[in-house]
Length: 96
Image 1 (tube, rainbow, N blue to C red):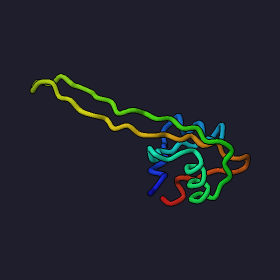
Image 2: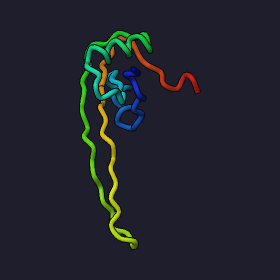
Image 3: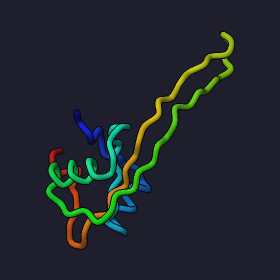
Image 4: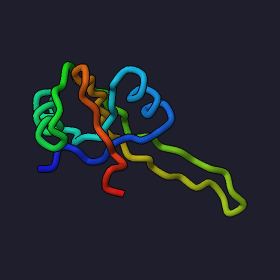
């Protein structure tokens, strides 16, 4: 089971990483904080101070178009924000 799905690279997440040394990841819904900590330490080789998690539920959306009402589902996910130890950082752009 792969715990880490992808890193979140948005303006807010990039600002957090530069100012507060916090990084955000989309993780498996069933993963707990200890599993997330171990997976990130293993993959990126950094020391972690804390892990915060958030569950985002599935949302149903509807649009009014000329063909009628179109309904869709936006899948839910779990997000983890990881606070790294002082002096550690993660470079997402090194493989490009």
